[in-house]
Each structure stands twice: as structure tokens, then as C-alpha cells.
Length: 151
Image (cartoon, rainbow, N blue to C red; front, side, top):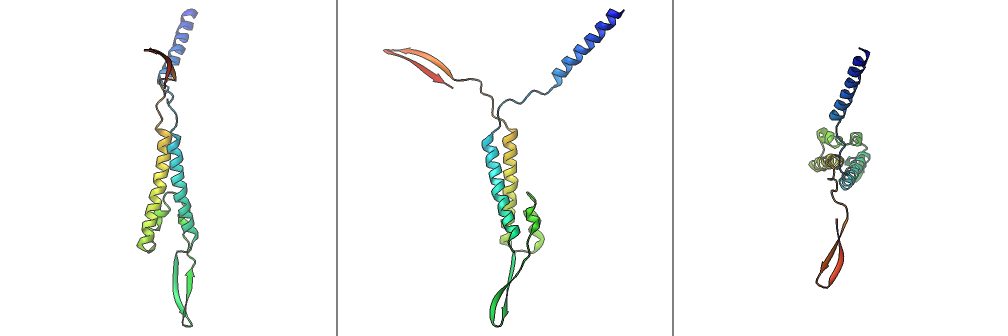
């Protein structure tokens, strides 16, 4: 009876180990596409740096006359929302600014999103693993002997 109980317990633990091996996800084959990751991070970095420059610069200057000569009277209205990555440029649309600035914000926000999407694509979409390594093949021809390599 003890032997039968030991056999059932051993068989049960073996079955669960086999079930665990069957349910484990296989490792991802292939390597990361670093060229896509680098390009995406570069696009994001340049567009985010552009947004930070616009966040620091005053965006509204009004010229008023003082003693007959126009002097710049700049309201130092900065846009700290542009420091928010990905959505910061899109938050500027309701501020009553010019259409040109809205176009710049739309392009900048779109480039930030595209850069991150490209970087994530490079991480997720892997290169297929190489099935063949470098192979050397000897060949013999008419008055020719040599080695040819393929990869």
C-alpha cells in the first residue's frame, strides 16, 4: 500500500513537471532589431528636444509704442506642458495661438509618437534566427580547384 501511494505521488509530480514544460512559453528566437530601436530613439530625442526648446522660449510677444518708438513688450508666457513627452505638444491646441504654431506642435507630437513606436517595434519584431552558418564548399572545375563560402 505504501508503495502504491509513493507511485501515485511520484507519477503526479512527473505529470505536473511535464505539464509545466508544455505550458511554458518558448523563448523568442532571433535578435533585437537595434537599427530600428536606435532610429526610433533618435527621432523621439530630436523631436522632444525641439519641444523643450519651445517650452523654454517665450511664445507671445506684443509690440507697443512707447514715446513714439515701438519697443518689444514680451510676456514671458512659457509652456511647461511641452515638457510632457508624447502628449505635451497636443495640449497646446486650445491656447489661441497661431495656426503655424499648431502645425509645429502637431508635427512634433506626431514625431515623438512615431519615434517611440519605431523603438518598440524594433524590440518586439525580432530578426529571424540564422539557419545556416558560414559554409565552405570545395569545388572542382575544368583546370580549377577552389573553395567557395556561403552564408
